[in-house]
Image 1 (cartoon, helix red, strand yellow):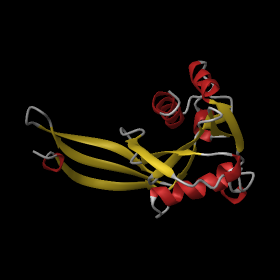
Image 2 (cartoon, helix red, strand yellow; image 1 turned 180 degrees about the horizontal axis):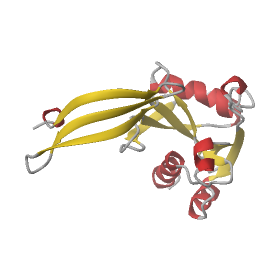
Image 3 (cartoon, one colour; image 1 turned 135 degrees about the vertical axis):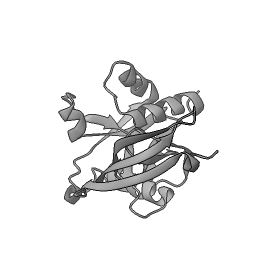
Image 4 (tube, one colour; image 1 turned 120 degrees about the vertical axis):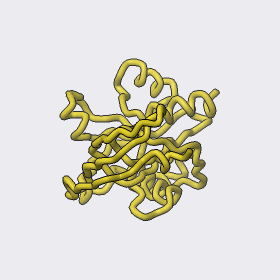
Amino acid sequence: MSISDRVRVKDVRMLSAEHYVLKSVTFDYRRSDGAWQTLNREVFDRGNAATLLPCNLAARSVVLVRQFRLPPYINGHDDLMIEAAAGMLDDETPENRIRAEAEEEIGYRLHHVEKIFEAFMSPGSVTEKLHFFVAEYDSSMRVGDGGGLAHEGEDIEVLELSIDEALAMIADGRIVDAKTIMLVQYAALNIFR
């Protein structure tokens, strides 16, 4: 039995469509015991995105960004977020989008980006699938200062850190962004071994 045999969408109501889309969905779900149960969930659709961790093997360093994020602030995080560069796909392929984001956010034109996996970051309520990339970088690939696009509200600081410092920042709570934790730990296990 496929999942589509176990789900019957009964009603979809738009709650908001300002910056992203928030819907209320009522559906019937066939439980493991065969009984049908009616449920209602709010679903946040922000589109899919890509994220990237540039790695310099010789220097044992990575490039991250620091920026303000309203949702963590509202949830009590009184600091800027340290993150891997990322961006919404906006009808572009994940590889093309992450190359553009690398130039916009961190100021590097990367030669080869490698997709390592995809993941749903908050599948209980958010439709977003994130495409994860790593890439080698060195100083010759620097084409600008980065910093993001001011007209999109971006005010990004570029950070070049050793892989050991990035891991320490996860351990002591300075890095609390899930995508970044996943990428830094992937790099520690698979790239900087």
